[in-house]
Length: 247
Image (cartoon, rainbow, N blue to C red):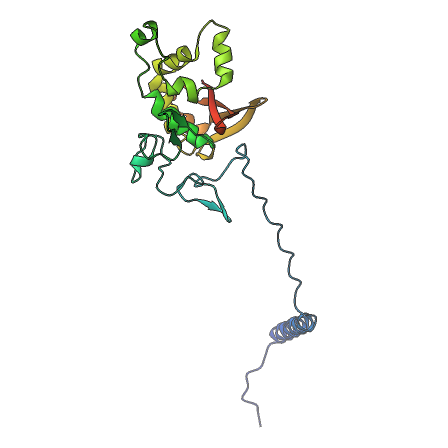
């Protein structure tokens, strides 16, 4: 009796046998791996070392309030605005106001101390104090107690004071010179609201003890000033970042 099964062409039959052989080989390999405990698991990557060195370029969002890296707080406290002009939901605690700012301490004798343990704090102080008019020139010639200018006394560095002293000028002269191109300085500071963690910032050592924060690429477009130089100084109120100059 003739079989009703259609005949299989020789070429097709050889192809089917080859596929069956490959399938059996793969099955045997899978069983062997299973018997040996499966494929080896790659060793876990070494943990990334966490550092608070301010010279290290930080993440984009590290300057936001409450930001954490592991168990280490790296952002400003919740309730403190990271924006140098104090805008946003926490405006009362930003650079636009001294009241309630945790980085501004009023001593029992009424003296005001600006704390800037982070570069972003210095940016906030500079943004606020450069908008504050300097002392009345009449008060400087009238004698008596020295007028207080926080921009001159607590934002500018001792290095700046020494450079201006070579030109027979004072800290107050340096502060007033900054105020003459205030708008250019503010345009620069607006591009670095998170200090060295801002987008488009390149951090490098300008000289021993001095850091240069430079805006690069699109962040520097149409700006007359693109660099800020800062240094860390020690004093009776701890270590604080101070401004060397901008350019």
